[in-house]
Length: 492
Image 1 (cartoon, rainbow, N blue to C red):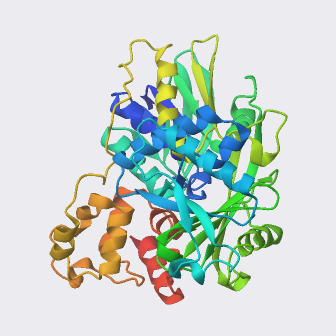
Image 2 (image 1 turned 180 degrees about the vertical axis):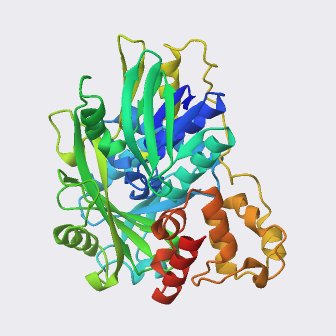
């Protein structure tokens, strides 16, 4: 049986999921198909920032920065539990007064490119005070501090997925494409669940290729007769370190090659160092952090730090491959992070929308632009409106009352619930009056009630889905509890 849809979306990363969420809100019939887990690619391997991109001013990408800053303001309101303002410190390592002037000028422009900036504006900061004396090297005495925002990238994808599902979208993960053909009635796709072996067939006049770094591979395999996108793949590697940062602030360090890297809070007791930018042509299924990248990141940070970071500080590493628009000119770190939407129509009246490039911060705007573009060839669709929405979990919550109501749960666990889920955690907490009500204790603050929620409501199929993309408890889960959790998931 063929199920009719308005849109078939291929790719469960941030862009595909935002398009699904916005389209479903319009009342369109949507199916999204992902070959693995949601956010299992680049969308869970970012630097976790919602930012304008201060460094993009050096390449004169003013319009991109302005657009991203506008989106930053909106996203903080849409998901206040997931997207938090954060102060970033830029230490003055070079003594040049001209260099300091350039940084201050850049920060001034950065603050004023957003018409609705409500975050603290940039200013100078002394770094030879108690808070930072043991953190920075002795010759680093001053710097600047500015505002941006931090997020849990894969949880952001999950909340767009929940929004789409609440509006009747069909979200399918771990699917093999058995067949994708074009008919007079539209694009016809048959998929098979990798776990259940169940097959489903869908048909729609619109096909959206939002496969991120797989975009060219998907085109070559299924859409070879259509013009191919010009993309360059750039690998960004990150190190998760067993260090806490002073005052819970983030840091921007300038490297000797002119690039910048970030050292930011990650999870309690851990920080994140990244990213590299390396041209990549290897397997998209198995990206690894190379020893040279580790050396580069540690050396770049240690120029500034009094206590050097070492390989012994590394708890975990990850790499994400970013698909960037190939302008044929710039080096990898100079390529634009903006997006391009390529709409093609066939003689049979079917359409393909290919999503090229993009960055985490601009996913909402990308989704709206995609639907506005599609509406031009589907005038009967509801009008696309750029309106404020709240993502699931972002509803107002009295945190003090919440902590009183569930005081039997360790405070660190409650803080994680609020940080990761917002009000979504009430789904499994309502009616619970003791730890015994929470079910099996899997260790690391993970209880059966949360596991059951993730298995039934958030598409969790494997241990990695749960421990790395829905939570980050893989950092602190011991082997005994890990085996117990694996067994529970397998037999659930």
